[in-house]
Amino acid sequence: MRQDGVPRWTFLTNHAQVLVCLATDPQIRLREVAAQVGITERAVHRIVVELEAAGYVTRARHGRRNQYTVRPDLPIHDRIARDRDQSVGRLLGILGAGGA
Image 1: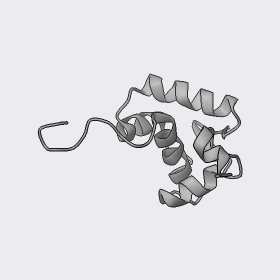
Image 2 (image 1 turned 180 degrees about the horizontal axis):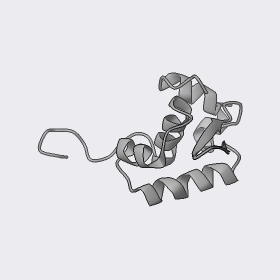
Image 3 (image 1 turned 180 degrees about the vertical axis):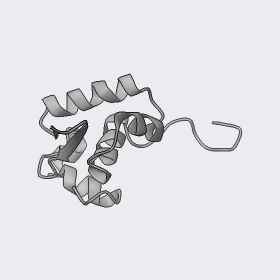
Image 4 (image 1 turned 60 degrees about the vertical axis):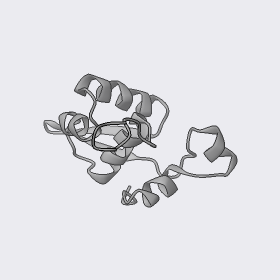
């Protein structure tokens, strides 16, 4: 626990936090995602590549920027959520990023 009483851990994985950032702002820069999540830009890039490989995110180049699209229809890659038929879209909706 930190001195301010806030735990050092979070409920959401870095993958989930990156996914929320991409769903909230599809043209966000990875540098901005890194600042919001509190990890390095390199770690964000690795996570985005993993999310793309799994089909959760697609990336399209628009000029000098990327446009990210999150697939809200896919099931959450987590045993507990998957057993309850929970989708990425439902998670994003709960977290206020339901515009995906």
